Every structure is written in structure tokens, then in C-alpha cells.
Length: 289
Image (cartoon, rainbow, N blue to C red; front, side, top):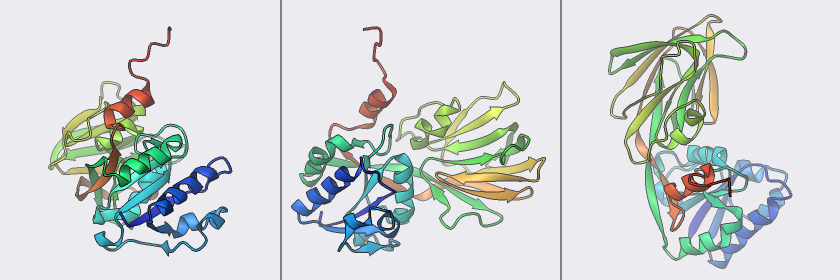
């Protein structure tokens, strides 16, 4: 790997040495480094003096890989740069819990050494796309989920859901989300949704605080197209797409389907999805001893 792009968010004094370590390891391997404009705009921009910047990525051949320095939110933000180019992304976690940014900051040097020794694989993760009768986002794709949510402290909303134009149900709730298998360990999990293996090829429909308590999360094939009609007492609500959100209004139609491209996640040997589940959720850990 000769050309690597880096994206991150504001770093604290505690994190600064780890960012410097990343840059040092890359330079030790004679890698040409590029840094996102937004990362360079943070108060620690002195770390990137003399490093070329980028604002967007247009071609798959521009970079060999991306490094995301931060948590899962930073990783999702990094994918908005990558888009349909499918450039592989490695997430280095500068915080605490992280399913997407699965390399801890203490493991930077050994993990990057494995990267440059070809001891890694690329997992192709399905993404979700949003189409609507009015434009809501410049980049209408996400890795985790699309959520329809009530706005602020307004009353609950009702969402009519259709699968391939077949009426499914009307949800009276604070919101409704459609998550990918990758997103099953995120917002969907906190709302009672199941954990789904990344390669399963599914969508999960999960209600947020439903009023009709007999409603449960639903797992279905990601080959289908979902359509939603929303009615809210305040005549407006929010649509979120991973870490981005937009306010909209009743009458808009939302269409959700699988994106025509995937996210390529770099997995260093020894840091697989199942290992991450055990580490992050403490599965099998007996706290009595």
C-alpha cells in the first residue's frame, strides 16, 4: 500500500500521541499520506503540516486504503468520502466501544504491521440507500440504518410500511428504523432488535418505543424495496441516515433498498466480527469470579 487517506474528528490531548503514532508508522513504511480537510481543520492541525489534503474522492485508484481515526461515528463519516469507490477502510478506535473501528489505539503498531504484511482480509458489507419524493441528503446511502423519528418532544408518529408494495403494518411509535446486518449492533440493538451476522443479506425493521406493544422487530431479505408513508401530529419529523439527519414533513414518500455498492472493511487477522462481539459485549464473561 503506497497511498493512504486518513479521516478523523477533533482529537484530545490524550489521543494526540496515537495520531502521531499512526503517522509515524505510515511514514516508516514509505506511505504517501493524505488527510481530509475536516480533520485538518481541528485544533490539532499542526499534526498534519506538509500533508496533502482532500475534500472528496472521485476514483477507486486515488488511494489504496482509508484509515478512520475515531469511533464508529467517525467510521460512518469516513464512508461518506469513500462512497461508491469501495476503497477499503480500516477503523482505529480512539475512544471506547467500537464495532466498526475495531482496532484499539494500543494495538496501532502491531495492527498496521499486519496490514503491511498482507495479514488482513476485506469484508464486503451491504449498505442501505434512500430515495424520496424530495431530496433530503446529498449522499443518500448508509452502512448502519435509516431511521424515521419524531422531532424533539412532539407526539409519536404513525408510519405505514410496505414491502414490495404489499402493505405490512402501521407503526405508532417514536420512530421506525431499517438497519443492515452491520447496523444490527448499533441503534437497532438498543431498541431491542436482534444481532445479525454481517454476511446474512438481511434488513431489520425495528420500531422505536412502539405504542402497540405486540409489534416486534422483523428480519427480511435485503432484496426487497420498502416504502414508508409518515403521519405526524406536528406535520414534521426527522429522517436520519447513519450520523446525518434531515427534517421533513408529512406527505413525503420514502423508499429504502439495498445500495448498488458495498463498504469494504479491512479486517486484521485476529480481529474478526465474532471476536469483536465477545470483547465489546462481554459474551461468555462470568463476572461472579
